[in-house]
Image (tube, rainbow, N blue to C red; front, side, top):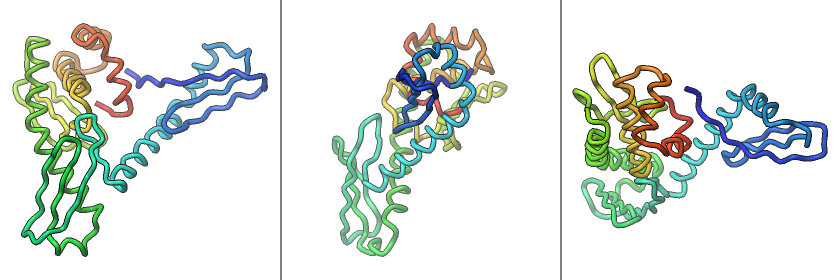
Length: 226
């Protein structure tokens, strides 16, 4: 099942078609006489280039968040507030949309961004324990079955995985960047893989039956491979 690419078309009176990715959005400037089918064919032809450009933008945004000390948590932009105190080890608390981190004074000489990345990973690990278990239970009630086991483990370039032969689902703790509805979509996606290994017609039918608006959340994570 291919990732869906959404795009905006601006018709003009020039004789050349121009394709660009601006701030993660795909924009097509096409001559007025181009049909929707012709434009879609060009999108498909440039599919990999488009996905690469969108991924580059997403990665730049991730780095931007860290540099500005703004972190995604359950779909919200949370502000990271860092203080240095006479402590033996770092502490981290979440108060509303503020993530308050207290670092030992000796950490002033260390790379601030590297410390922040490690601490946020630990925060995601802690939040994931509760959020993923809750999502698993919601999806279990929805579909009427559950895997034999599940693991919370960091995965490269994807939020979830399914080992069908072992009835095992693996979920990336970084999933807690997303809101709970998107978390449920990702977990449901893996539940569907317990029944269907590939993105077959029956897989899509099961996904749509249990989450009719699944495409909304698919759009959010459409660059991630499951």
